[in-house]
Length: 225
Image 1 (spheres, rainbow, N blue to C red):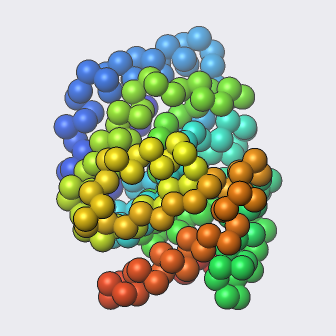
Image 2 (image 1 turned 180 degrees about the vertical axis):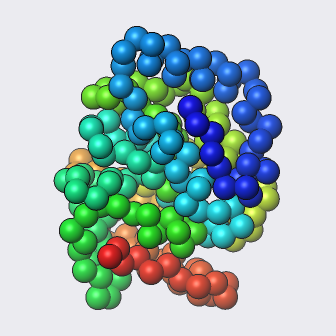
């Protein structure tokens, strides 16, 4: 597990990497590899979200659950897939909502969301790895403890961050966030199983930009090129 974080993140999270749960997590991942199991994303991409979105430039957090478990999909950013890979159903629905929420938005021909990350949108999954073909396989192995600490650290050390929480899993993390100094946008998950129950029409992207503008911050350009 290659731990490469942007210096700002490393400064606020460095203590985590010596804790018992992280030592055990490292051992678990080593055991997975020793058993011949393929892990996604590849090691150099596991902490991608923390390299693409510097701590000092953080504006928005979009919380996912698990990395994609298909070949060449996951690259360390929640909901995002590498170029050349079929756009997954949830991301298709995110794009569909964007076309009605953001005037002039044109659906991209790929699912790589790096452009969002580089504008201050932390695309964070609760678990940062998964066994190939086995969704949820790396849950409750230590990742949630780490990513919960990430959310708490953001809550404690920043102000005015917008947390976009889609679905019950993400919304349960609201307890980690100080609501007196941050913003929370909630709706059902964009998955095909729930998008019609209130994700479509929820307007999370325009709401985010309205908040950023009202606080004198540059809005996010949601258009993916």
